[in-house]
Length: 425
Image: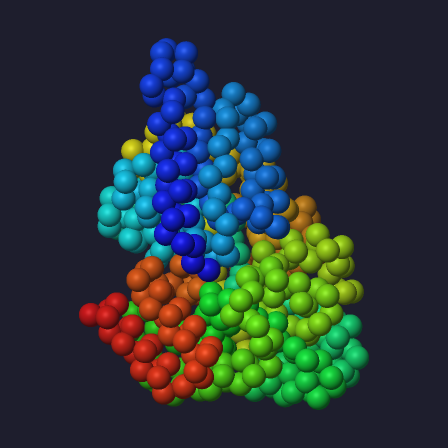
């Protein structure tokens, strides 16, 4: 998922042109310069771009005089975009707003004084009342809020091809009780002739599957304890998770290391796999493929995680030194508005952060996610920046990626312990 340094430099150069070209002329150019906003995301293709397009269309309705400049950089989970963004921020050339996962991922930007406090924006826009209290708490760092969520995603979702399971004599509507029971069904699928029972993708999708197994075995409290040191990374529950994760890899497609999330999800859509553990951005992919929820596909909480909502949220920031700060705040206004959240989430498959959203406005899958987020225990996603700072997450990702090739369980546990010791001190 890494771009060559030359590409990153090129992206940074394009950004310099975008932010610099308007400051060299006369008054007309300066006036025009105020009426634009450059927004940096990793929503460059597929269902993610469909979601961004829906949001920018709503922005154009609300602020028709402001030109939207799309600075998207392709790459699942934002790996390429984050590298390009880091280059721009280091060069003191920030976009007007950039996408970041809410939660611990923002801590590095905050520590580097690269994002502005948006607490007063929350008060002015009434977001302190529109967003649920537990979400506000997760967004708050030392009494301040630094980003505006456009949505809520659930990461512990298993996407199921109903026909593939029925042909193997497995009830697609009944989730296995735990990972061990799921492994029994995976073997049954394999024995029935399904070459790829479980579709998997590149490194971050592997980490997401691994975090699901950790949640299944440790429970919400034990999993959350991994991030403050109260749960040890060499505990029996983690070791059991590593062993089960190794078994799950045995049922995955052999080319998983080279596939991004959408390609892995497509294997299920095409009927060549029974399952895929993916966040609910996959809902948009199934919908765009004209699949019907409850007929061609269904979903469950990943076995063993029922009653838990594995949380992440895409959010937008106001960088320090944003060239067009007023326009950037207008963008954040649309992102946080009821209309903006509805347009975006209907397209992307996620659910709105606002509590005033009407579930009846959303399709069947999203209604299940809205109910779960309201009622279930919420934990923070590792793979999507909510649970751990970037450096710690990167160390875990590297260890999980290495395990995908060498499957050495002792080495993975040792690497996980070392990563935690380094992060927690």
